[in-house]
Length: 164
View 1: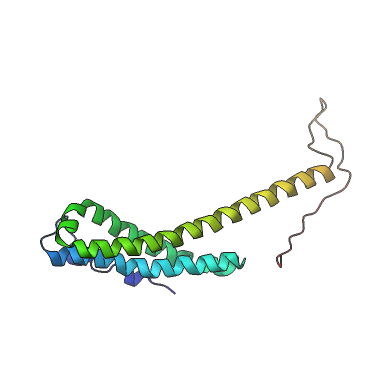
View 2 (view 1 turned 90 degrees about the vertical axis):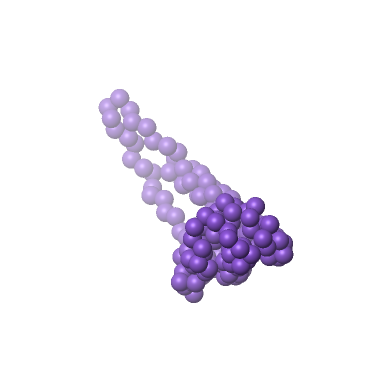
């Protein structure tokens, strides 16, 4: 699902920093909307994969997510620079965009919540693994004055269960 070609909607029609008409203002809102829908779909798909612990599938979405998010941020930045004129010339479109943005924001927050939970779980697993490895190996080793260390009692191994 590569959507980068669709990620430059109507901003090319009015690249300058002006809004000359209601049509220009509506085009700015439409450009944001055209990017918001596929970006929201990618974010929601990633969230579903992460909840199902299907990290490999979630990773496949990263390029599309990055491309769409970059284009979306460029359009939002453009909108912010012209916001007063856009609101004046296309108040209905701005209101519609605000409603859609509210729903989009909810999807983003859910995605961020899931990502943060996974970060916490992985950090905890790494910390516990390191603690257990330290316990098995007799703790940290330091050099003596003769620059030698005691031979390790036995090698420790780490197993990763990819099914869990």
